[in-house]
Amino acid sequence: MTTTTKIQPRALVRASGGPRYAVALAVDALGTGLLRPFLLLYGMTVLRLSASATGIAMTVGAVVGLVCMPAVGRWLDRGARSTVVAASMLVRVLGVALLLAAPTGHVWLFATAALFLGIGNQAWPAAHAALVATVAHGRERDAALAGGRALRNAGLGAGALLATACLAGGTTALQVLAAVTGLAYLAAAALAWSVHVHAHPAAAAAAAKDRDDEPAPRMRALLAANVIYVFCLNLFEIALPLVLVTQMHASPVWSAAIFVANTVLVVTLQVPVTVLMSRFPRRSVLAIAGVVLTVSYLGFLAATSLGHGWGAPAVATVSVVCTIGEIIYAGSATALVTALAPAHLLGRALARFQLSTGFGLAASPAVITALASHGPVALWGSLAAATLLSASAVATEKDR
Image 1 (cartoon, rainbow, N blue to C red):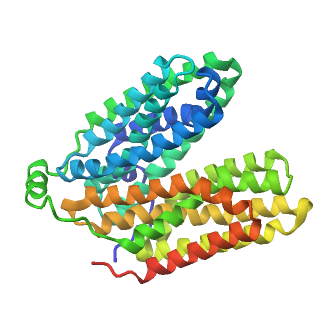
Image 2: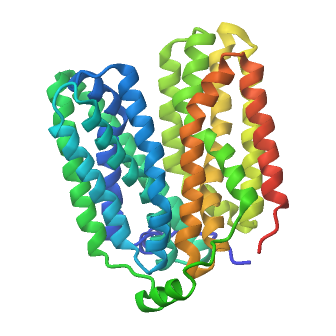
Image 3: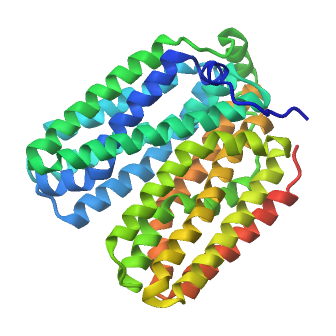
């Protein structure tokens, strides 16, 4: 089994698609960070929509955006790589343009803008993973995927901080942020397209034509487990603030500090941890991630029983363990899919994986808030049991 024991920045950039593609990822992430955390505010303050209408439009946009994934998968299986990445960025340019053009009170135009933004956000992960899998192989590919995630989180964090500093400008500032986001997406799309990465277009097209009806690897246990695993990505934005502020009556500063710490840890540790875990089989690593997340959920349950004085610091401490589990999961899940899928079915396999990810992300806010309403045992106990069961399913599933 090949392992990666050293991190070589130049090799990592090359395996990630090259310098221009790395810049495209950074610009795209920065633009996304400028707008995505404040899209709800844009609908409510600039377009004067109700909070419920804005939230429903955003949720519907994200969920309906998943409908495009089968088509994206087939497009990737015909050899397209950088073109699909660029398209996922361009469709978000259209979404931003609709935001800027929407008149006050026009919920349907806002919903359409959210739909285009959702399509781009759902299509991008699969397209990016397919591009990296084309230019890198083996454990180098795993490190490249981890590097892309670290870079994206850094860009998202920087964009969100910049946008936060600009919010004092009111509605005008939000409109300017939206315009800058659109320009960032446009620049990123041009850079990504200029890389011109294809997966042997002629051979891929022939394979896709000859095997158009052949299904992608089923990976049923992996995909089902991924729906549960992905809940960890929403904990720091939904579950922990909900528990800390409404149940433990702690200062909102704790939630903000934990979120910032999570972002910093992901940016700094995603690549090193992925490289460190490369000595183990990817499926075993993904199962380990489930065990670490389960331990963290039980830790959160114990922390919430400590009361107001020690509860918040305990939650902050356990959140570090949860972040490590998230890092291990993110570094192994997509890498496992790219390793399992045959080359001519890679796009469809990644599309199915993104469908499970998107479904989990869409369902987790409602599930988390519903469980939290029944107390800490219902929330953390259910998450721990479901995650441990998922880890077991991942570990026992046989590769075909």
